[in-house]
Length: 398
Image 1 (cartoon, rainbow, N blue to C red):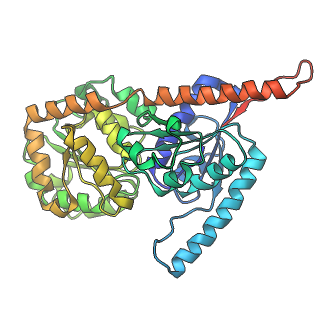
Image 2 (image 1 turned 120 degrees about the horizontal axis):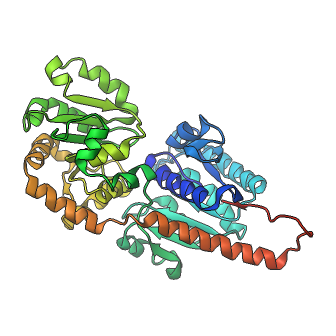
């Protein structure tokens, strides 16, 4: 598998890797190509061969985004990506995979491109309504393009093989899927919170979201006065250290009502416990919140490529599953979150629509697609290769 840079590219791969290990056990060898700087490196490279709770061989390559205008930085990025392409080809030569799957980001391009050129089975997964550049470039080459949204097909219809486009949703991490079985009160107890606590959860993605944090902290008194025991929990990612320092300026009475977390394995519990979420609009984060039915105020990051976060948030908002607030109106964010916290009927409507539109079965569907690819490859290989008597068939490689 290949992809990286952000949780949006890594978490779907994480979920699928765990599902494949559970399905095949030691009869499958798993490899992951990513960058040295992205979230995947922190999770996988720090625990070689044992990332994600499953055995995964991590292959870091050079890959980075290229500015759309001529500059020295763009030239350097181009050179780095050329090196990454050569590294990807060498990885395929050494690992000899039977299937290559890309989940987005520049690290996905080289492995999937070379695999397609070499005639290996290939697939890519697109998590957003508006497909990214890597997806658009690879769509004509791969066997399967897995989509999170039906509307994405219109962006790729002229590029991809129509029979290769499949709408599957976003595969969710086991920690998130498991939380679907809990009631919010149970999730709060598991986190050490009182069931009556009014919890506002802020999610900014793996890089955090400083404008959201600042907008809410600036109106903290008004925000948490909606309920006597209201709390603000911020999943701050890389912003956690700076934000904890920022909280020291608050009075103790306000500071004790705010919880700052970096990367936590309990993300599913925090989402399920939340009465209201304030979130960026990455495809994976929204898919997780909607699957759990969390009433959400989505604030798209305006710097996202092709403004794809706004398209994601608008898709859910137009169907009554979340509320959309553009960053230009951040002065209204605290009021929007507080109003939703106080309006139980509105929260119930959002929850019902979100759960009705979500696709929690996406992981199982993608796993079955992978099984079909591997079975087809195994059948072809068995017909064309003669094994010595008694020799075990080598494990599948993904």
